[in-house]
Image 1 (cartoon, helix red, strand yellow):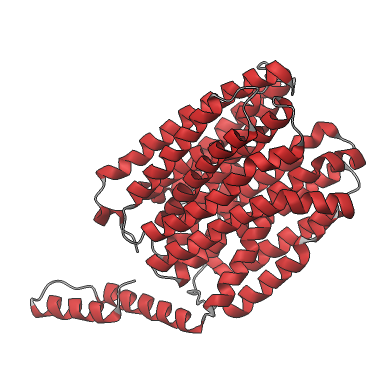
Image 2 (cartoon, one colour):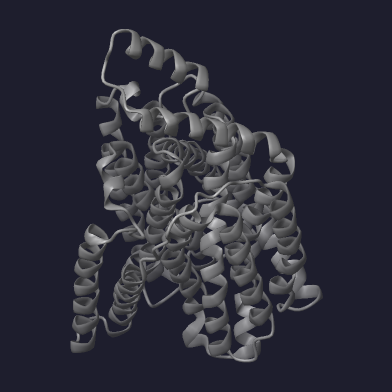
Length: 495
């Protein structure tokens, strides 16, 4: 925001030399600065941060804690053929709802949309805990994932609203560190709950924390929403949902049938048509769910493409390194957790360091350094052998965790700061959409390379193919990120 004194000084200079001056622009600048100062004076910053940390933790821990409990859930409910759907449907719902909540937050305010998303998430959590069949669990996880879309994108938008650039980087480091903490505690808490109480409680435990986060943010965050006629992009929401659902389901069928069938081709055709319709609707819409104008901003476009590629790598590593430990190295689940533990420790370290560096280093240099660590780590995975020891695996996972911490934090702060308030929710929605989309597609695409035999030499060979793919994607991310070097820092329009 431009300070009022600066606005007035500029006005006086222009007026003195009789430059053309638009009173509406000048009034808008004053109004925006007054709004920011008023909100900052009324908002209880510490309470807002605590609320956002809790909400982020609930979202972050959901993946690891459910993965730990899945064997017991399948044992109780049956439906082993729906095993992967319990995870993928949650990610799919999050992907679809993330840009929707990002746009709605711009239209109706961050606080209201955060509250609605949290309530949907908690309802889905409660119903998931009450599930009596695997089909019910898949449906209720869909509801939970819709609410998670708000908890994924709106906290970052609120940070961009309330805090100045340097503080955004610092707080973003704290938020990112929550993902590392969740990665450490998720498997441990999940295992303890499943072994001592019941798997149902991995969902029930969300309720008290979610309620606390909701109440804290509601009473602490103050915002003013400009009164205007609201337009919701229902057509865009529908076509995007149809497109993504058809595409991911086609990949699932392709994995099952091992060849293109008529039904798979049909679903892919629906996905392609849906994508074309979505782009056309967004280009013509008055209040599009995903403003295509965002992609005219070089920083946002590069961040989104890299976010997609890194999201693909992240989800593949998260699921397949434990599979390597158990299926190739023939160690138990405890050692899987130990092998992944360094990633959860070094990620927050990288995030915090990234937050500090962004105060005096360019975004390009921080993100490039992060992707270098990721390339080296993925190359290390390729050289894994049957007799590779757990300490060696820990070194590689520590390296990739640090790289993710650096890169993801820098990209997030960059996107937050590349647009003004009225587009910040949509910008963050688009960025989180691309990261989540990368994770969702990553599970499906890498699954095509995975052997049906989840043990021994066949699994080892297929996982090596997956790791080679990850090296290629990491190099692509580095190349895309390198385009930022060609941009002057002043052109990045950080606000």
